[in-house]
Length: 386
Image (tube, rainbow, N blue to C red; front, side):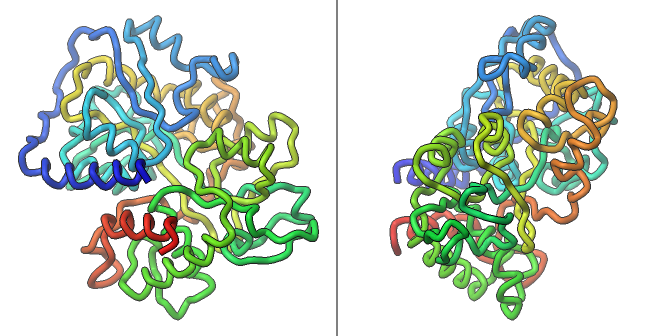
């Protein structure tokens, strides 16, 4: 509950400050490196070899740039927004459900892509993506993207689950036991979109076009499905490592997850697999964005350029089980990733993924949609049993 109150407070503060915080001027040239860069990142995104010595894309950057990387891990987009609103950070690896809020709240500044030499190598599908580009202005550099997968225990499922119904509806699984108390759901309001995505297939009469653009009736149906799910859920997860432990030690057998957790569990030779069910999946396309009041702008730009190096992109794609923002990282042999690995991670499924974005009242698919602040308060209610 404390985390959700923080999220709500952050949203309120963004609205209140939007009028008073002036948008930062876009840099036109770099100065001398300041000596450090402070980054808010998703778990597993900034590795320096501490988890696995094979995966380290921080140490070399520090040595070559003179910029010490300070890392603050955040487990949800709402935590990222709260941290960026508090200040003291230079960069954030924001997903689409945070990036537009950060832009609207003037918490991030435009990025001069001419100061990022490797910009030309970025996937053309991402360069103008609506979650970091507003009125033709770029507010970040694409980083990684991928689907929210259905992770499952192969001892509980004789075959890969074909539908997300295994986490939304009570049923007996292949091991003869109920799924009740053995599934998890994501601890963030954006999970409402997963329910809406499920309803797009199973209740087409609702007319949902986008899981992020819901009118009052569509939104109510999604909340009802989540209330039904609550009776099954053993934990609402937001910490990737706690979810890993729950699958290892607490009897959890199915949940929406990230390829990161799947890879780590499989690396321990545990009976874990993942799939994208027939309803498709939501997903994330993350962008490195620069704080409007970044104290270390030169080191920030140097880091954004560093993130686009194909060997970093390649190794991160292997480590996280995601897709690089630089397609060449799949094939140029400079890192661990291969063309087959990128295909396995879903590089060819870009059009099938419904990428996280911030729900707004003025939406494209219909006259009026339920805005994100309602998602926040109502999801608190769902988790609280209301």
